[in-house]
Image (cartoon, rainbow, N blue to C red):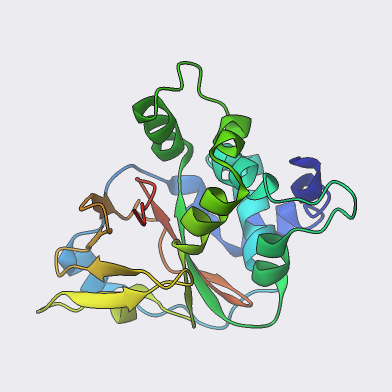
Length: 205
C-alpha cells in the first residue's frame, strides 16, 4: 500500500533542505515561551503536505504508521486515495501528524500484540477515515493561531468533531487524552497548509 506514497517522493531531498528542523526532532512539546517566540514561517516551499510527510518519513522513519493508515484507503483497482488527493490539492489544510510510537501505543491498547503499519487497516475503512479526518482542519493554522495563551480554544476537524487547544500547548481530544506537540516539529510550512507533529493519535470516539 505504501508504494502509493513512495512514488511521490521525488522531492525528498529538496524537502529536507527546505525544512531543516525535520532532522532535529525531540519528543517534547514546546513551552508557552517557545511558542510565543516562534515567528510565523515565511513563504511556503514547493512541497505539499503529502510530499513533506513522505520526505520526513524517509529521513526520520517517524511516519511509517501514518502513511500505512492512509494507505488503507487506497483503491486497489484505481490506485486513488481520498486522503492523498485531499492533502495534495490546492486547498489549505492543517494536519496534526502522529509519530509511529503514537500508533504503536494505540494498536497495543486495542490488543494488537504485534503492531505494524498495516495492522491499522483491520479497523475498517470507515473507522480509519474517521480517525484520519479527525487529524485535519481547514485552513493554514500556525501554532500562534492554534493556541491561545489565555484560554482553551475549540478547533473543528474535518470529520465534524472538535479538539481543544489548551494554553499549555497541548490538545485534548474527544476521548479526553492530553496530546503534545513534538518540538521542534511544528509550524512545518507546506505549500498547501501546515503540519504539526503530535505524540498521540487523536481519537474521535
